[in-house]
Length: 354
Ligand code: SAH
Ligand code: SF4
Figure 1: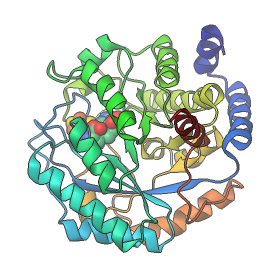
Figure 2: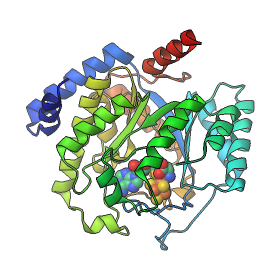
Figure 3: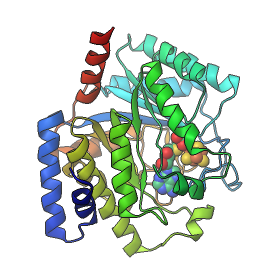
Figure 4: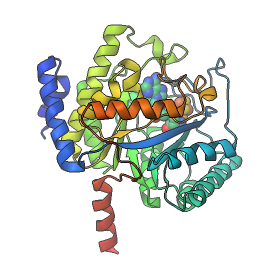
């Protein structure tokens, strides 16, 4: 697809035209990754973070946040709960920490989860930037996918959204290291950030393509009152609606351009619309990440305002979600890892070169 066409599709505002775009992207999803929505139960196991991203509600400088770290056993039990409910995979996510105790505890948790599930539970990590040694150590311990959003592929915008010691080059280098260690690699951006243009979003999609990603996770940017970026952000219903529509457009165009990758319909979509995640599937996404964090911690993991489902436990979420997915004529791919065809092709190509 040409740059101009991507720009035109991303810019669509008219409801009927947007609907036509989503239907085209949904057909592409069916053709490239098939029918079905895969679950990744997400455990947000700690909000302790060394970083200070200007948009994030749990950034280090937000002293109003009560910090927590789930005990290892509780993290393992949450993961096993998802395994027993036949979710094919889980995601372990937290703020960024690089200390030895953290690295070893993640390694221990991964090994325990693999052992208890006879190697059958798929595990994705979303634990920020780490050294090559740490990435490889966690891969050896059983993690096989890693999510690390580039947030924006424009180095200047990246500087605007982060303190100077958070370097764009390091983020790009980390994505390369993850691939080198053998992970299926996912990245993505926030949509509707202050100063971000449609052309930036086109270049984000081109960045995904150049980086040869297997998975995409992106969602609308949602201002959090206790962050520096909120002051520069438009707030209110209209701004939310614009960011929501733009996020759906972005999912659809990404599906049409990248074709055979996994694309998540993220919780941030649901924060802006009660049916946001289902609408994301209908616009071409194929992954949903139900929150399986114990309810008592959820209030403290607010990356953005109005994060949904903070008072529902994981079992309530299961019932509610399955019904919603059936309502849109889709089915849940229970008990499967649901790897992206893109990764399978990439993997076969790597093996045949060896
Ligand atoms: N610390 C890890 C994982 C947790 S943050 C990391 O940063 O990679 C996960 C994602 O939440 C971030 O990548 C960012 O894209 C998203 N996020 C943070 N603040 C947000 C906000 N205000 N609106 C929307 N998404 C946000
Ligand atoms: Fe920490 Fe991730 Fe939030 Fe940045 S986005 S402050 S690394 S939790």
